[in-house]
Length: 80
Image 1 (cartoon, helix red, strand yellow):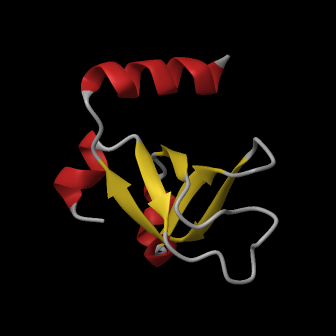
Image 2 (tube, helix red, strand yellow; image 1 turned 45 degrees about the horizontal axis):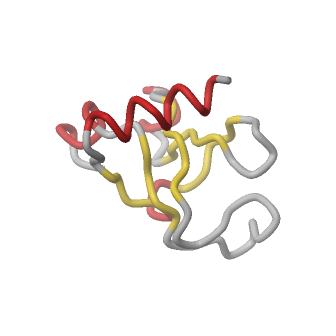
């Protein structure tokens, strides 16, 4: 992800779940957890289908900038 996208996007969409079919669904939004160490290794930390956060190859995802009201509701729901 580009630097500006990393700072503003709290969600990413899965583009590739090869090898992780039980953990990721193509086309689904996932909450992104900033992790500089993972990012330095080309990874993104996301909350997967298990409800836990794991690091996956960054190229499996694309950042999604949502309207502020939608993002606020989704973040609140994901922390509940």
